[in-house]
Image 1 (tube, each protein chain N blue to C red):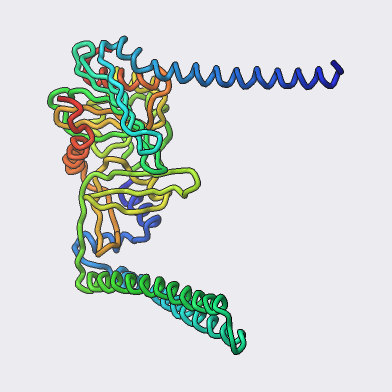
Image 2 (image 1 turned 180 degrees about the vertical axis):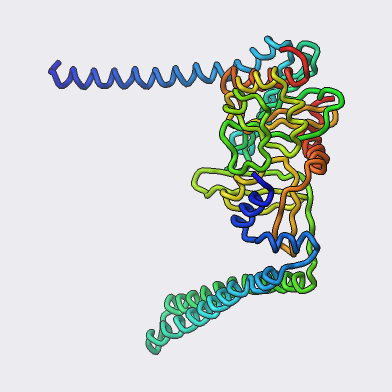
Length: 202
Length: 200
């Protein structure tokens, strides 16, 4: 298998093209990556804000409608129900708004990183982690240069444990990656193996 | 006793025999697994040390260690079972001193062909290459480590995946499980001894 075929496979599974990888290798961002990166997260912010507004409106309007139907002298139990409906709406809305704000802050940092084209290059041996358990979906993760990336099973299967890879990231986003050279891989493997062995043999 | 009563008694007796048989089989299997490490210690001339931390109400770390010198080669085996919340982790490693001058490298020995052939390293041994697939980014080291003796021992290992790491001074073979039979324990130990250029 040629390297370009392998890179195409990786790109297809992760979502990058050879042109994008080449741009990252040159230390630059591909225009398509900038467009994708600055767009990412916008939908989440909108959805969370809308859900928050709906929860707030639903809670308050629901509580008012309930109160309105109680008559001139509502009992304390009915009033408690009114407070509970309004309170639940407000709490739910707060959760959605906090989520939206966190997404907004993350997106602002990511957008700033994309605009300034700050590419983090991570190099080292790749460590594959597969966590499976009863009743929970399998998790596929790989770790390079001290950072972990969640991935799909198909992409995870394409990666070689212990081999040297170079990853190009902007903020929290893995843009592209490629296998490194054998020589640098051996140097990195040494660090990984030393950690694994620890003090087993003295 | 009526015919129905005889049938009921017979069914109950058959059930009791089946349950007793299952309990006996499980107990026998557990005794056999428990004896794996002490027997290996006796065979290879190593010291066996079981360890356990934690209880039924906390996370547990259980390990079985073999340590010593087998046929002039320092050898250490550590099998670990660990619980962390709802997660269960099992792993085993066999370590020795690496032969002098061997460059560092990580190689994966698989029983199934890998999804990508990028890092596939054919050893040149047709019989071995048809049964095992080796992936690594250091093919020269793979060919240096996987001598005919090592390949023969590797073919005896039933594990679906083995990881062999060569580092400065150390050679470590590991797999993500604990051995449940003699072949699963002795196989990797023999591989490491063969790789250290010492006959088992």
